[in-house]
Length: 292
Image (cartoon, rainbow, N blue to C red; front, side, top):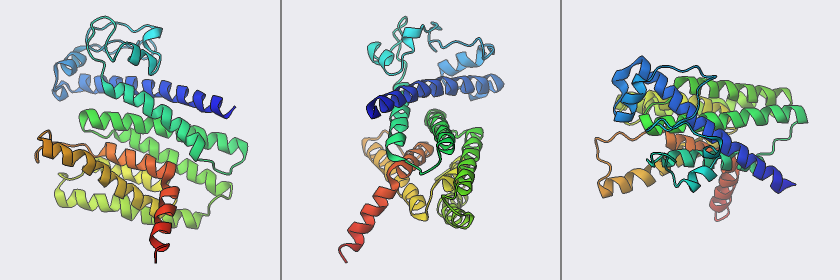
């Protein structure tokens, strides 16, 4: 039965990853219609000229040729693999990020079920679980938007903050944590995350990290349960960034003037810290103090 639940969550997550991808493109298209000067590619220039469509009538279609996708073109993960990442009609590439979003959200849903087991009454557990899954979808959308267009959407960040506050409130109501503990850890996390990155943003005038990254770290500070987890987010984000940026510099694909979005690294680090952070922290403490 456990495997059935895990498989079902992966399928649901993959479907929500597909929804997140479509939503990101719709939001971008709406933004381009409002300000066509933001369009930097032929594809975006075409999107900027397309008329707005009622959300209830809007159907998924190929961004290159306009082919309206059928149900068998929209099966998460499978359709992308069968079509080898290309449109059925024009054969132009769909993009690897769409496939990655479906797989990543599916795995995140499944991993959350396996690794996160809060001791809550059934009703509250269901509410917290749904809120957390919604947060994952928002994070996926934020990740894609920043990776593609170097912008962290403020409305996504605000929604994440609201979700984090509701979850903390539920944990307080059910006696899982105290208000004092929440304020203490959130305060330290705020210094380590948005506080530190806000300072970096101010000193570098936005060259090292943007203000959107600082805002994103505010809900992260509310989500984490300890200052160690907050530190882990900061540490892993910089590690992930180095793993991408340093090889890029060595190969010439990235220069000192290149724009590199940092939001995806923060989001990846946050997910790792939330899912396996306590285990990583415990392992490190045992390794450090066990040898003293």
